[in-house]
Length: 170
Image 1 (cartoon, rainbow, N blue to C red):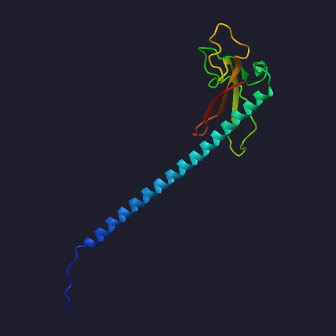
Image 2 (cartoon, rainbow, N blue to C red):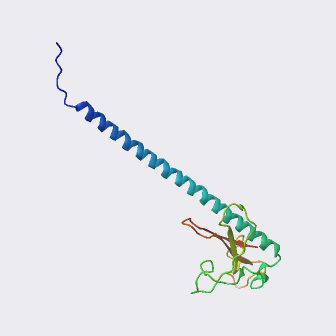
Image 3 (spheres, rainbow, N blue to C red):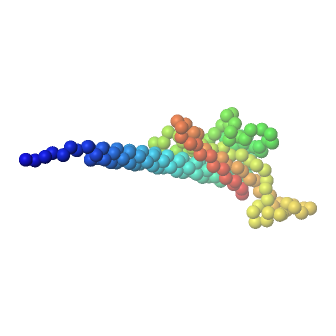
């Protein structure tokens, strides 16, 4: 005759604990994967916005080249061209009254397009002779018109905006 020994159920408890541990590891792995996917999508979108801002900077530089020999004559005449910044006033790229120029769209599928403004910031010494204005007489070719170009994409829908600036001179 067979005798059955009484089992205490330890194997069942150990198996259930292992199953819970595996479930927790699987859930945390899924959360990490989802987070990494979102981070990658945000990085991709940010890179697209950076490329759009760079494209707007290039469009602004091309518009300045189109105004040669002296683009400073367009200040106050052409929309989006501004004169010297005034000390103590809000920066133009932060001022809601600033009129921005829309360049040709780089990627029309994106709903946030870049735009730019151009500011005349005065005549600065040329990079070839940075100390040419420190003498008693300043040569005619010492100073050249200098511009600050600001390009941006506006932040919307919890997405970051991009602001880029460059200095352009003749």
